Image 1 (cartoon, rainbow, N blue to C red):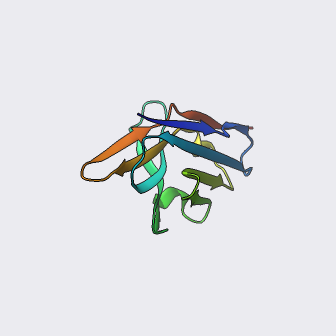
Image 2 (image 1 turned 135 degrees about the vertical axis):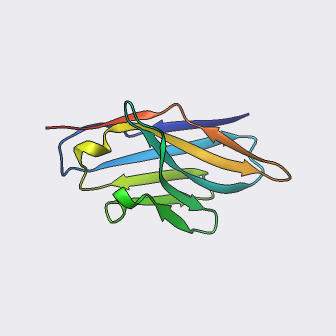
Length: 118
């Protein structure tokens, strides 16, 4: 069983910053990638950022230049530094982990709320 715990969400004014963190624990043999999705009310869940074990990153166009994803392979943690936040960044942010070995699986965190509002 793999367990993801997220932290760092909250309320911030437009232009402000937040840092999300996610720690994975449990029976993890091998990790392919970790990252973040988000879902705003009435919208589909969208990929925000992903980072592979080798360090390759990918971002949604809407967050490029503002968000930075990083990970600590030794600690199985991933972080999302969010700067220049906009009201449209308001959403429930979910951490995910793509792990496995002979078979690959995806684990999800419970979600952390980010609200950008004045």
